[in-house]
Image 1: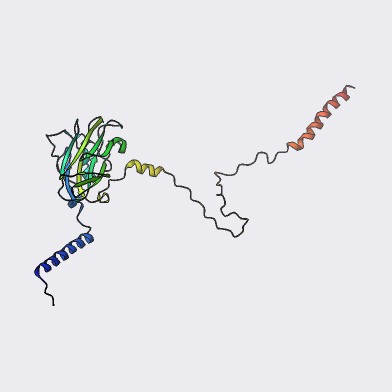
Image 2: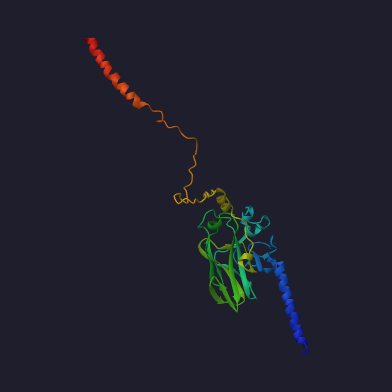
Length: 287
């Protein structure tokens, strides 16, 4: 009988424990959303923990780059959780391109989530900028008002992966040195900005969704339901068409035909006879 060595037993124990941990994550839904988030910042604002358990740090660029603004705190932000509106009410902007550096030490699939809300301009083409990820343009011509309107929450999500020292995003690949640089690029219209942002492990399906846009709800309510085709029974008679036209629905009571009781054709001979009789009678009276 072959003797089992201690190293072999050790590897077996490790394999079993790894399998059990994986099964527990699968049955329990894996790590929570908050545990998947590796970095989160409330741009232009203080630290905040949102309804999903994500802990946003105070803006590390405070006093270094750009300007912080809380102009939006006077406005309610549509589509956002009432307890998390502060994430869209504060912002950091700069008169030139600025950004954040996110350290990432593990390979895998990641999602960058950026939060925006237009709280100042009331029309499009007033603030337009790009977003770059390690030099790759991932958002082009970002116009918040054009996308969602005024004082309305909007999240931009960008999926990327890090494998074997390479960053892959939107079918572009570059060398990764351990830091993810998120830049908000100055455009032709006003200054770039961001309200909050975070990086998490996972896929786009794992990102919490905002509430439906009120404009889309109004559009759905005003849309009329489509007319349903009437299912007519098929006939075995070859002379009978397989599909009959829809029955025309009357919009009101039938209007009586004004010519249904027209007797003008009977009166014509009488009028002619009367017209001949009068002159004849007049001539006889003169005689």
